[in-house]
Every structure is written in C-alpha cells, then in structure tokens.
Image (cartoon, rainbow, N blue to C red):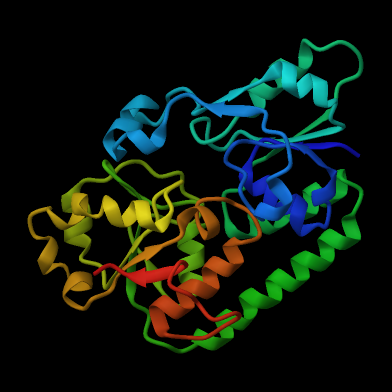
Length: 305
C-alpha cells in the first residue's frame, strides 16, 4: 500500500501504526519522526516564507481575523500523480493550515484511471483524535494495531487523571496565536482539563475566533500557556514581546506568580495526532509538577523568563 499524507497529524498516525515505510509522499511540514519522514518526497510547498513574516503579517496573509484565507499549502498535482498513491490522508478542519479535502478531491478527480482512496480527518475533540487512529487503521488494513494503540493512549490519559485527581485546579488560558490574540480551542481545553486545570476562553471542541487583550486581561488566568500554531518554542520566545508589552501584562496573576509557559505547540497541541496525549502529560507537569510518563524537558515546556 502506497500512502500520501497531506497533514502532519496524519503522518504521525501512520508512523504510530507502524506503517512509516509505506509513506511515499508528505507535506513540507511533516517533520516527525525525522528519521522516518526525511527521505519521503514532499508534494506541497508554502505560499510564502512564514519565517520572514511577523505573526500579524502571517495572519493578514491568510485572510486576517476571519481566518478564511487561502491555504498556506499548494499541492503539486503532477508529483502526486507520479507517486500513484493508494491512499491519501487529508483534512477539511482548517483550510488555512493544510491542504483541504476539497482541493485534494478536485486534484484526484482530473486524473485518469481509478483514483486513490481519499480519507479526510475531521477531529474536534480529544476523543475524536483517538477515533482518527481507528479510522486510519481501518482504511490502511491494520485495525487491530490501531485498537491496541488507542488502548495504550487511553491508559496514559487515565494515568494523568488519576495523578491529578483532587488537586486544586488552576484557571488556564491557552494562546494559540499572538497577534491577533487567539485562544486555543478544539481538543486543547480537554487536554487542560484532563491535566487538572480549568480552561478559560474556549470550550471543548470549539473552533475559536480572535480575542481582544481585555478578554485575556479580564479573565486574569492563574496560568498562561503560549503554544502558537506552527511555531517552535524558540520562535514563540522571540515574539513574546507582543504580549509582555501590553498594558497591564505585569499585573496578570499568571505573570506575578511566574506561571507563563512556553510549550511546543506543533508537537503536542496544534496537531490532532497521537502526540496530544504527550501534551496532556506535559501539562500535568506544568500545572501541578506531576511526573507522568517520560520526564518533561526544556524543549517541551519552560517558563517564560
């Protein structure tokens, strides 16, 4: 079976299911695990160099606050056809952040001969994310493997819940974009709750919209999590001045208590793949100093100095 993944989270799932050697195509943002994905041909490109733009410029380039702009990805239809995949994994959850199902379906439709199976992954909640493993496992012919991996991930989540049961739950604001400010929705509120926190500014499963600085200031969270979509921690630190320069920032409870954290958003929070479970373990450490799973290292979470 020849698999093309047009979604980094889907690539994570394929590897989780032990089928990394079946990947014949991927996006330019599929980066984990590097030893598996590095040799796999890339079939997408970015429309602009995000590293050269500020958060505000990136937001405006993809449609501004409405978040309805063109995708950051362009699909190389010729390269896709040459790879002759049996299965293409894509999404329609965010047309900005990845190639949409509609784009892929339109591309495949114009090809000659029988087309590949196109599976669109649409998770909104933490259970949805785990369900995607089963869905992909069924399509790729490894349902037993998928069921076993889901059971293991559910056991890890249960271990976190047990570890933080009965603790005082801090009020937590998760920020997934810095300019404009944007609260993290979808599965992130559930990650926070599972790790022993009380999520603010977004409900589980919610597709959020931008918030104002007074929204965050008035919520006065006990903990602020900075996990911008697509930004590694070092990029987040470089742009943290967008927040720290805001009027009243030093007076936030989270700031006065030293509880503003920089997290690896792309690895554990932005992408709806199996590593969101590691994100919950990281949050248990952040919120309660709880050690669940592997020890948390600086690259996964550290306080903003």
